[in-house]
Image 1 (cartoon, helix red, strand yellow):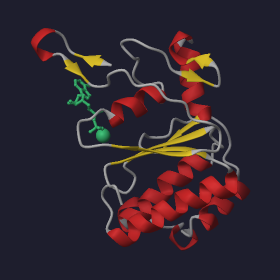
Image 2: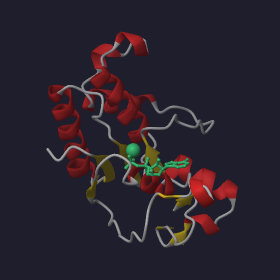
Image 3: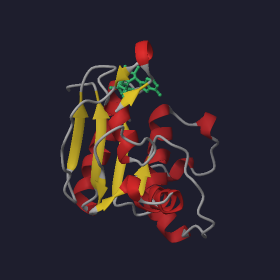
Length: 177
Ligand code: ADP
Ligand code: MG
């Protein structure tokens, strides 16, 4: 992936090739500016690669028309760093309650976003991803702004989601811990 032209040209991602199997929990690790977010955005269908291809269940994502790609993003990819796009469907209350319990935030149901902690906000974002039953969850440094206790809790939660729901996850971090 190349951004810009001429003097402003930035090679954000160069010659990267990998495959993620269903049910895998993959971490992308690297220093700031190494192209992690760009990779995630390309997988999310938000950023077309300059060269190369991205296949989602065998389908070349960027060969799809815009509308199909938008639907795929909305229904199949749980990107917890982006605002959820509404699908004009009814919320399944039962499922919502189950997820809220699973995330251990049922005592915060009546609270506004600014009334809950960073870790709890992150859990809400995870819930937003889980409720659509995504094929894959993409998480861009989900513990980036959290203290070590909350970080640990979020990581354990991802592990549990991966194990119990066989959920495919790609998570970016620059924290080797
Ligand atoms: P990371 O997430 O690993 O910190 P990024 O993928 O955000 O790295 O960025 C990789 C490189 O691409 C950086 O040099 C960054 O400045 C550049 N970059 C990212 N997005 C853009 C953009 N929209 N326009 C121009 N350059 C960009
Ligand atoms: Mg980044």
